[in-house]
Length: 148
Image (cartoon, rainbow, N blue to C red; front, side):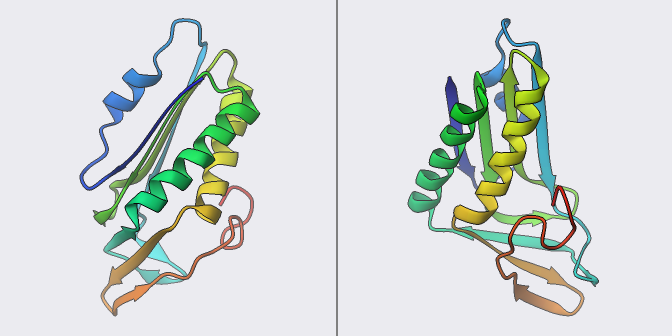
């Protein structure tokens, strides 16, 4: 098992994450890209400003990633979260998992993203035509049903 965890201030380098997980023994490489959407709870969103206490967030993100990799048998895993200003359509989160078979990759990424949202201290401030506001933490699936 090999795990890469990064918190970055700039755009996420998806090619580097995919290169990190490349392994000829793996028959499945799954990519999850979380992007900023143009609405939240019925209001328009133009961007999100992500904030964190970096040292604590990196430590907790590594713990979440390693737990998912171990529990789901992920051979290689890259998790990159962006902080700072992220515009609509841009990626704020990238998870790339490589496994021998597809099912563990799907299940591992789902578990990882759910745990990340619950445990990793990253906060977001949404901006739209009505101004800005801090987004309350949510439990996965509470807003949009299964799959978050």
